[in-house]
Length: 453
Ligand code: NAD
Image (cartoon, rainbow, N blue to C red; front, side):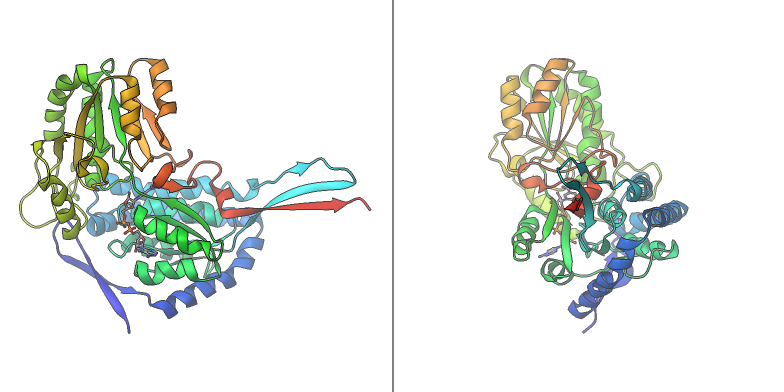
């Protein structure tokens, strides 16, 4: 039986388009086509594979506006964010298009011959994408996976399939052979689970909730299937009294309210040294009230709606449990709007302090010493990102080394850079994406000894 999903514009609540959801048989057929396409893609001359990836990047570049418009309508992302996201796919493809000719192994000294290593592609890689950043997260998987010589099947989130489907079409236009990169819209319980159970899929690259990530890791054990997991976060923004407080307060809203807070790296806990707490909170209020929450297609919009009515009621549930200190504004009428909201956290056991809200809500808490700040920042099962604001270089170094998180920035909230590694400590994930080593995570090392005899 054929099923469809109606994509809804989160800013207007209007239906955009019906998307066909793949069933099990269609998923198996796509995986089998990807397995058949693998040997030729693996054996293609590295320079030819690189040329195809560069052509794919060039076609994405020609379609940046179209892809961005799709994302504004499908996901409610602001125009500024959506164009950045489409360009990020282009940049990731360009960056990893330099990988095929550079996927070198070692030559290791041995007696009686030579010893060499090869980075062999795995086969079919299954990529499972969440709804919060449909384009970049897809590209972070398929860019290096394809460059390393794997074929890819990719499942977008049910809510946000449109840009992924278009990227699949653009790959074909670029000349990427049939079966090498296939986008399969469908349910997590059908398409996503099949990536885990189908023996031809040799690695699952999953980004999403920690809860589903654990199930995928457990399922993958059955076939000793490789996994990369990018999961949830509850990142801390630590502001010391010696910091440029005006700069720290001005930067704090975008670090948590970007993408309406639906960001695994959202700095959703702000820790402020007690002696600067009152001044920081006073500076934060106008910064939060100044966030332009507007129709995302308005080029000046800084924050759009939440993805769905369900997500809005989840976020509201967190806020109902606490007292709001102050909030910004949001449009009235249709759309899944939620105003940027600030809570002064009472204790570390509150849900707002411990759990990922995935909405535009931030909790602020004072701390008393450097040790206290590191202890509070680490008092979470997550470990994805974080920021440290201080003018003391030694402290910046000590705290950066002390905070258990994969991606930290000092006196900034740097976003993800495709040429640096990205991933989580603790329950925020396993493995790393992006950066110079990402193609290696889509290969296995083969060690070969060639005798002199
Ligand atoms: P989710 O876990 O509900 O879904 C993610 C994807 O997994 C979707 O495509 C979904 O269809 C699929 N899925 C669901 N159940 C599945 C199953 N049993 N087997 C296989 N696939 C299944 O997450 P979401 O709500 O779409 O995304 C939000 C979450 O993603 C947040 O927790 C956020 O922190 C996390 N996230 C992490 C990163 C990171 O890089 N660490 C980046 C973005 C989002």
